[in-house]
Image (cartoon, rainbow, N blue to C red; front, side, top):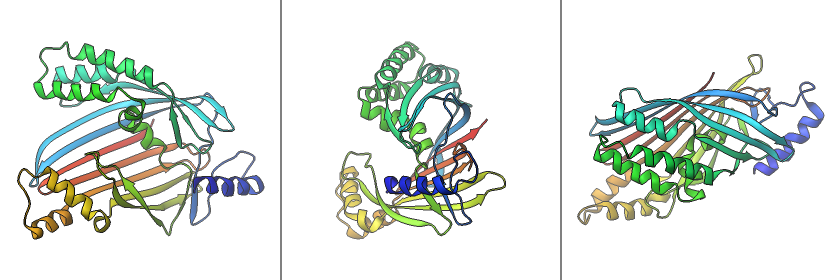
Length: 310
C-alpha cells in the first residue's frame, strides 16, 4: 500500500507542487505525511513518558520520566535518510535519587543510528551492536549501586536480556524511534479509513487480530500544520479464542465457568490512541501524543508518550 501511495503522491507532486520546494500534498479533505527533510538538518524534541498501574480503580504504581531526543539527518539519498538520534537530559520526577542515577546511567547519551525509506518510514537499525555494548556497559555500572531495591535490580536484569539481539532492540529498546516514524508514508482522509492489523502477543503466542483507524482530524494550510489520528484496538470477536487460551494459561486455577470466561474476554482491552501534528511543508512532526490502555479483569495499565518539538 505504501509503495502505491508513493507512486501516486510523487506523480502528483511532479505536476502540481504548491511551489518550487517539494512538500506534502494537501487538499481540503486529504493529507499525505511524507518526509521532505534537508541533509544535516537538526531538531530537538522533549519527551515525557508515563506508566501507571491500577487495580480496582486504585493506583498501585506510577512512574514518569522526561528526556530529549536530539535528531540529525546525517545522510540523504533518493532511497531515504540516515538519521542519528541521541538521548539527553534524562530526569525522573519523584523517583528516589538512587533510581534516578541508575536510569540516567542507562539512558544518557545513548545514540541510535538508523535508516528510513524515501517517505520517512523506519527501515533498519544500523548500530544495534553499538547500542548493545553501550547499554550493557552502563548496566554493569548501574548494578554496582548496592542501595537499589530488589525489584529494580530484577528490572535491570530483564533489561540486560533485551540487549542480546538486533530484533529485540528494534522492537523493544527504540520504541520512541518507531513511534516517531509511524505516521509517515500514508495518506489520511477526513472521512477516515479502517483496516485490519495484528497486535503482538506479549506472552509470545499468536498475535491478536485488531482494527486500526486512520483519520485526518485537522488540515490547516495557512498555519502549515496537519493533525492526524490513528486508533488501534483489539478485535474481541476474532481474538476471543486467543484471549481465552491466554486467560486459561494465566489463571492460577482452571476456569470452568464459561460465563466467567466470556465476561473476562468481553472486559479485556488493548487499545492505542495516536495523535500526530506535522508541518505540511516539510513533514517534520510538531507534536506526538500516544496512549496505550491494557486491562484484564480488575487490573489496568496506562502508558503515555508525549513529544513536543522545541
